[in-house]
Structure formats: C-alpha cells, structure tokens
Amino acid sequence: MIDYYFIMVPMVYLAFAVFFIGILFQILKLLTTPRQLTTLQIFPAKKPSWLYILADTFLLPTVRKHKPVLWVFLMLYHIAFLLLIFGHIELISDIRIFQIIPHEVFLGKGFVGVTLTVCLTYLLFRRFKSPYREISVPEDFFLLILLLFTVLSGGHMNWAANWSEYGFDISIEDYREYLSSMISLKPAIPEMIADSPHQIIMVLHIFFANLFLIFFPFSKIMHSFFALPLNKLRRG
Ligand code: HEM
Image (cartoon, rainbow, N blue to C red; front, side):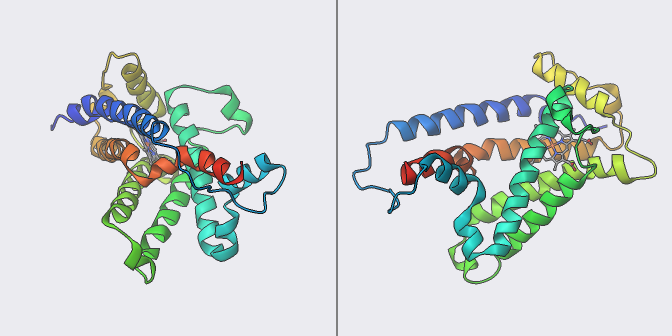
C-alpha cells in the first residue's frame, strides 16, 4: 500500500507553519507601511459608528443592495464556513459550548459541506460570465477550485458516514486519535486510517487543505483578517 505519511504529517506541520507565520508577516507588513495621507472615510459619518462597522463587515449591505443573489450565496457561504471551523475544532475533542444545539460532529449531518459546495460552484461559474470573466485573474479561479476540491473531499467522508447505508469505516474516534497525536507532536496514523481502503479520500482532503493553508496568507482570503479594520477606517 502507498505510504501517505508525507501528506498526513510533515506537510500538515509545514502548512500550519506557513499559515501562521505568513499571516503574521502580512499583518506586520501592513502595520509598517507608511500612513495613507488621503482619507478612506465615508461621508456623511453615521452614528454609532461601531454598529455600522460591524454591519458593513458582516452583513455586506452594499452587495445586498446591488447584487441580491450574490449576497445570498455569500452569506450562506460565510455562515457555513464558520460552522465548518467549529466542526474541525470538534474533530479534535468535544467542546461543550458548541453543543448548545446537541449534534454529532459535524453539525448539520453533511449539509455544511453541501452548502459550501453549492455556494463555491455558484461563485466559480459566476466568473465564467462577462463582465466578471474580464476582471478575473488566474488566482480567483485557482482559489475557488482549490476550495471546491477541499470541500468535496471533506464532504465526501461526512456524506458517506451519514448518508450511506454502509457508513464509513473511519470513525470520529480515529480522526481524533490522529489529530490529537499531531497536536501533541507525537504523530501517529491509527491503523483504522492507514489500513482503510478509503484512506485516499482523507489524504486528498488533507492534501488540498494543506495547499489551501499554504496559499491563504498570500491570497485575497486575507480579507478575513483585514475586513474589520478596513471598515473601521471607512467608518471610524
Ligand atoms: C489539515 C487540515 C484539515 C484536516 C486534518 C481535515 C480533516 C477533516 C476530516 C477528518 C473530515 C471528515 C469528518 C467526518 O467524516 O465527519 C473533514 C470534513 C470536512 N472538511 Fe476538513 N480538514 C482540514 C481542513 C479543511 C479545510 C481547510 C476545509 C475547507 C476549506 C475543509 C473542509 C471540510 C468539509 C466541507 C468537510 C465536511 C463537512 C460537512 O459535510 O459537514 N477541511 N475534514
């Protein structure tokens, strides 16, 4: 059997190192950039400004006004992504606060993956059409395709576990054993994963996720860190 150790262990550490160091580097780069002399402020200023800052950042009112269909997909995508982050944290261990709505990991029995797949497909195909095609660059397609591959492979495992009559041979306990060993810096791939005929789908998921994490700090997804401060500049 092929040994996927490199993708499941060293590449994961490398991906997380690039992810965290890259983000820190980008934040420091921004903080040391000379101050912009022109203002980005929106006039007339509305009060209370903190409410408008939060609303602009999380409710995307301009998109809602001009592109309501895009807005629906963007909101669904971001909500599902948040649930996805919670789900991956729960893959490591039980978190009591996340169980406010009692559920098995992941919340939604596969619908988080479905929602992300539908939204990413929409966001990708939208760029095939004019005028978005003309203003799209290869990075836009690369990012969406990479995310789609990651979500489809992760979703596949969860859909098989939830929706297939036969279930999925790798269990949450096996994932937990693997992830805990990674966190405690004593990496070990449990037998159930190493010997599973379905290991390849997990390896593909981790491979695409690693690429995504490595690419993250150098891509437009950095907006997840900069959207709030930018809106603060505009409304502050
Ligand atoms: C190295 C980092 C990652 C690891 C080890 C990992 C591992 C996993 C595992 C084991 C599952 C299956 C859980 C189950 O069957 O119940 C899963 C599900 C999933 N993963 Fe990941 N993942 C990683 C990063 C990511 C990233 C970066 C994304 C997306 C950008 C992602 C998207 C998904 C999705 C969409 C699901 C299915 C959720 C659902 O259908 O409810 N994963 N992940």
